[in-house]
Image 1: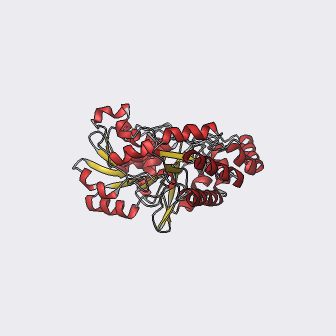
Image 2 (image 1 turned 30 degrees about the horizontal axis):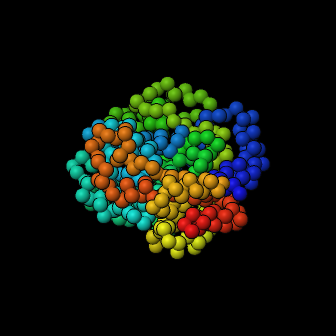
Image 3 (image 1 turned 90 degrees about the vertical axis):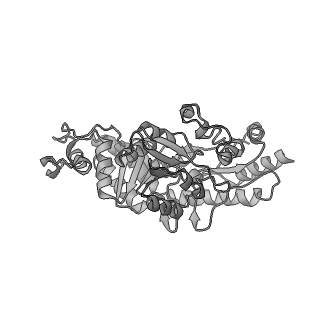
Length: 396
């Protein structure tokens, strides 16, 4: 039997008719960038997360870059984050000129360890950027408490955690801003790239909208006033809804071109209706793995802390024979993934930071042990039983 780590074609079969109808409608409309489709999806996503504003961008990476820029993070600043995550989290900190400061992680949840954050705070620290890794929320109550005490901003990297909750509130609504990715493999995936920034801060939303689109027109004028106190009559004009804004060539900030395509917005709008059901199925699969694997000698299963709702973007269990396990599963037709083989503080790109092996031992241990199993909503019971049987056979 073959069991893929992810099979997006199966999900597409469930929503094919609705998506194709919506995409064809959008192509016939002649509106491919911005417009009503994007505005409608932003509003729907903001309501889902429980925030006032959702600002669509081209990718989860761009969401992080623009959020950091909108906060004023710059050369000489430091941003605290986790070493056990995808490269983009720390890369974006470096892109805006700041220094990523890595804090070790919790061995059970794989998330940044709040107990180790304060010792890394200096007079140059401006923000904390926690990651809800593999779809499990960080202890945001603790993170926000530390941030308030030291007057720091908090940006949530929720790229793997759309729909996850802590204390009844969704990720992306728990800090100054939340950043999401709609890369096709995510729980809410586009048919290409895409991302979103969420916030309750009106001024921050204006700045993000300006930074995503060349610092131009009304949002550019308003953002310059917020950031630099320079007034401009253009900020009071009303932007038209048509394809061409007559003020698009009035630019006020050096910014980016990071827009979500209207076709992607239409598809994501449809898929958002299915997200909770898809996430619930992921939770059922995770519970099955936990039941079948938790008592198995040689396996350490991931734990979800009380009061948190994970959405299981990945199911990453720990095995001391990680490579052997992956190779054995592959020989049986079961795909797995080795997220992540190298902790960020030991990546070649960050050699200039001076970290050495042994500096962040928990993250380093996890990169040597975590094996991610197939966990997508369309997996059937026969496939799940086969995956578990293969793991049992490996240890036997």
